[in-house]
Length: 272
Image 1 (cartoon, rainbow, N blue to C red):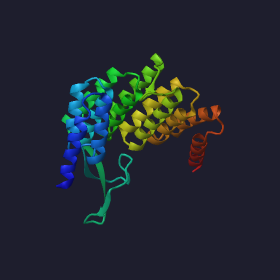
Image 2: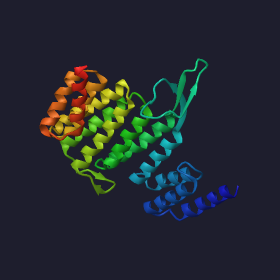
Image 3: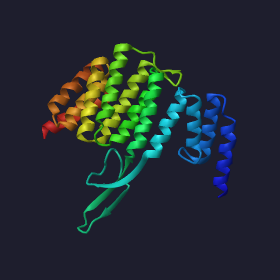
Image 4: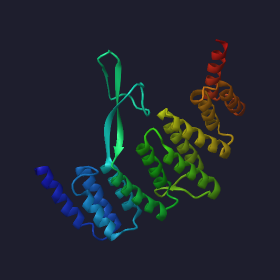
């Protein structure tokens, strides 16, 4: 009871002090969030007041996105035969009546209304600040979590971002800080890894499509060439095609560790 009362008092005090500037609202929001959690008591009221006063404040829109995403996200336990599912370790492993091990995985589920509200706020932030790549990454990351084993929308959003990067060459920023081409390339590699570790058919295809697109844009980056080789080796079980790309990577960089190790594996496997 005391904790609830303290939260209410904090809300009243901080909201009253935040009525004049976006910075004031942001400070009130951050204080309330720290006190009660991202979806705790009073946070929504501050966001609504902030939105009424400054509807085009992109930091407010991102806060609304974050609030709705967290509010609408929960988790459920599902049983799967795999040792890993969607890149996750089992939450719990039990044995059934036959002695067979059953793995329980914790996976996210979303309330559709909250997720739609989150995306609506984010879409407006992207429209208002199209070169802030942080908002575009928010979109891709949230879609990845939302879609689970079939990240079609996340892959499409990432491919659209890649196309824009190489056709328009925007001067990206990350919340006001410069964001270089190398930063962009590294971020795409992280998303490739996210698709890969899903270890699902759509995950592998997304990994392949993004890697192929980046391989055309950055032909000397062996990381994406290795990715395409890994796709053929693991997802398609085609060592011949995989070796073609690993050899291409090694021609560019004889010290490419991933390509050399996978070529050794393929060579040894062919000898058996």
